[in-house]
Amino acid sequence: PMYFFLLNLALLDLGCISTTVPKSMANSLWDTRKISYTGCATQLFFFFFCATAEYSLLTIMSYDRYVAICKPLHYGTLLGSRACVHMAAAAWATGFLSALLHTANTFSLPLCKGNALDQFFCKIPQILKLSCSQSYFREAGLLVVSVCLSFGCFVFIMVSYVQIFRAVLRIPSEQGRHKAFATCLPHLAVVSLFVSTAVFAYLKPPSISSPSLDLVVSVLYSVVPPAVNPLIYSMRNQELKDALWKLMTGFLPKL
Image (tube, rainbow, N blue to C red; front, side, top):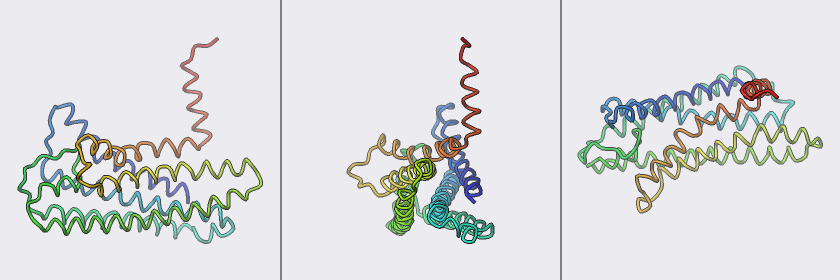
């Protein structure tokens, strides 16, 4: 099950990166900041889809780690192949519905305050700043609801890891404790980075907003987690570490 979830996570990471970075790189190379209205809506939809589905999947993966460490004898029963497929499908469906709802709400608003976004990709708070309609409170309220649901998932993840760490500390073998911590801590670090920066980006007060700060925070939650996830999870594979070491030492001069 863990590798099945990692496969889904890798696909969502690829989607997050592919939605924002290539267009930003192309604009930099061509010295332009243009994106069509349809392109902006498409970018927002797919980014929200991948990001929401990934966060849902990270929540499921915390449950997977909890069952594997705290209830190992029930692992095959609680996380059978059918249950894993259903949970992964629920994560993808949650991402799709959330993206559809936010995109439809955001782009139904009339935009009359220009057409320039102070970001390297289309994001909802920047688009709402261009709206001249009071109905943008509807989308703002929807964002608050989404953040509250995300916080609920974060609490679930934290509770799962508290139980995991309590179980790990009772393991008599030092090697066993090290293996369990090596499995869980990278996952927890990525979740914490993603949630903290995303919540700050969408709920920070306007008084501390600035283009440079917004850019840094956006990169931290939209680019860094999808970029480091493959590195963090693949480095736990001994065969991959051995191959990387052989590649690195192959370039060193032989004594």
